[in-house]
Length: 328
Image (cartoon, rainbow, N blue to C red; front, side, top):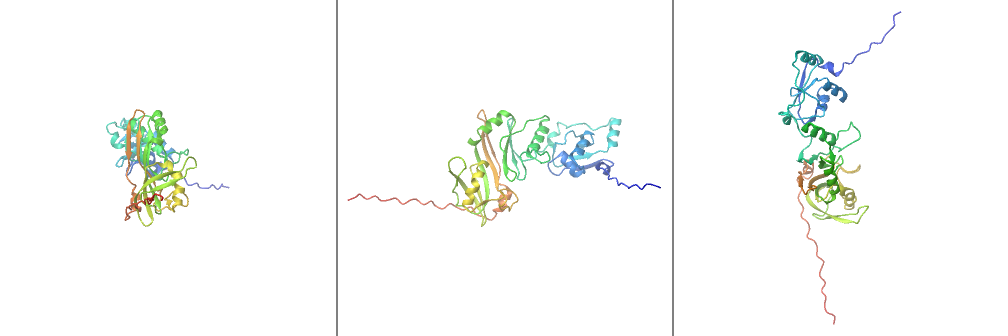
C-alpha cells in the first residue's frame, strides 16, 4: 500500500522572482536597505543584508557595501542574480566596490533638512512623527538616520551625541554634538541659550500677552508670547522658550480654556501631529563660538490658520492716579 504524502507547495524566495538583473530608480531620500525591501521584495532586513554581502547590489554601477547609506532621488540601484555575480567574477569584469569619491556627494542626501553644520555640531530639523532614539532596533529613529548619513559622508565611524530631544509629535531643531566635550558644554549651558518655539492651540488668548506658569518645583512666573495669527477656532503663538516649558504650559492653557493641539490622548488633532515646533536656537560654544539656527513655520500650522488675522493687543489699562488733596 502506497503511503499518501501531502504535497507541500514550495513558496519561492524573493530571489526567485528576478532571474536576471533588475533595476529601479530612487524617488525620495531613503536608506538603501529600506529601498531594497520596498522595491525588490526582501521580506526581512537580514535577507537584504545577505544580498549586500553576496555583492548582488549595485548603486550607480558600483557594488554597495552598506545598507545604511542614504540614497538621493535619481540614484539607480541594480540587483544582480547569483549567476551574474559569479559570471562577472570569472570574467574579471566585476563592478568596482564602494563609492566613487568624486561622485559620492551627488549620491548622498541628508535624511532631514540640515540647518547648520561645522566640525563641532550638526543641527537639523526633525519632522513630526519621528522619535529621536529607541531601544527597539525595529523603530526608525533620527539617531540611526543621522548616524548613517554622517558615516556615509565621512566614510568612517562617527559618534552621535544628542544635545536636546523632542517627542514624536513635535518638530523642530535638534542639535547633535560631534564630540563629548561639546555635548557636555551645550547641555550644561542649555538653559541660558535663547530659543524660539511656535505653539498651536485650540482656543483664544489675549493678543501678545503672558501665560502664568506654575511649575511643580520653583516659583510661578509669567511667560510672554506673541499672537502670530488666529482664526475662529485656532491660534498660533510664538514663545521665546524651548520645549522644556511645555509641561508647565499645558495646565496654564487649560486655565484659559485652550488646548495644545495633538498633545495628549484627549487633545484635538486636526493636523495629525503636535502643535509644537522649536524654530530657533542661539548657541554659544566652549570658546565663545556663536551659532544661530532658524527654521520656518511648518506648513501644517500655516494651513490651519489660513484666512485668519493677526490680532492686535488691547491697550493696557493704566490704574487711575489718585488725587491726594491736602487735609484741611
